[in-house]
Length: 318
Image 1: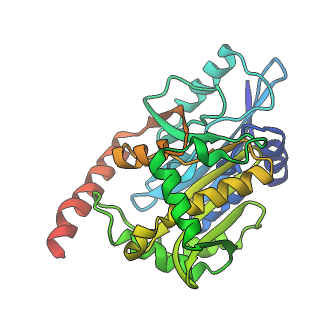
Image 2 (image 1 turned 30 degrees about the vertical axis):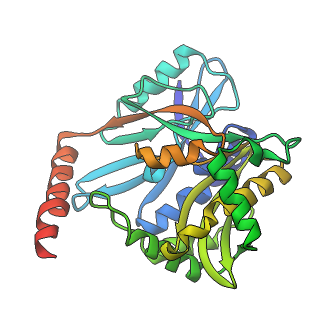
C-alpha cells in the first residue's frame, strides 16, 4: 500500500464518485473548519496492490502552542474515516488501521453509511429516516404525539421557508444555547455561520419557521450525494408550545424527498435520552458507527489542563 496527498480537484472528484460519502467528507466542510479553527487540511489517498483505492480527509490543528499536531476526520465529531469507490477487503482495512496507528493524535468518527469499521474504540449511533419518494404521506408513520404536533403547526399557519437571513438564525441559536444545561459547552462563534453561509447553496439550506412573520425556529441542513443531515437546530422557548420543529422537519423531509435524497439523518444525540426519544418518534432507524481515538501522553496532559480550566478555574471566576 502506498499513501499520497491529493489535490482539491481529485478530492472533490473522488467524493462525487462515492455515493456513501456525506457532506462531512467534502472539501467545503473542511474549509469551513480550516477558517474557523485556523487549521490546515489535507487529504490522503491509499492505493492498494489490488488497484483499489480509498480516501481519507483530515483536519490538522495545533495544540499546546504548536507542540502537538492533532488530526480529525471529520471536524467536531462528524462522519469521517475512509471512503472508497471500490469494495475493500478485510486485509486492506487492516493496512489502513496500521497507518492510523502511526499518527500520534488522531480522532476518527466512522461513516455509518459504509461498512469500513476498523476495530473502533467506542460505539455510537445516529437516527435516520429512510426516504421513500413514493410515500408522500410519511407523517402517518410518526408517533401519535409527533403527528399531532405537525398538524397543529399546519392549523396555526406556521410558515417554513429556505432563507438566507443568517443573523436571524444566529439569534435563535444563542437563545437556544442559553437554555442548555450541559457540562462546559462553548457556543460556536458567530463567524462559523458566516463561513457556512459562504459555501455553495447546493450543499446547505437554512430553514426558518415564522409565526405571524416572527422567526421562532430554524435549522441548518447539509446535502451531498444520497444524504441530507440535520446538523443544527434552534427555537425560541416561548413558542415551544406551537411545536414549530415538527412542522419544520416535515417540510425538510418533504423537500429532501423531492430532490431524491435517500437518507434524512438526525445526527447523533450525545447519549441524551430525551433527544433520542424525540428522534425515534419520526420513524427513524438506528445506524451504528464507531469512533477511533489515538492520543499521545502530551495530548492527554493538555486535555486534563483544559478540562480543569473549564470545569474549575473558569467556574470560580464567574
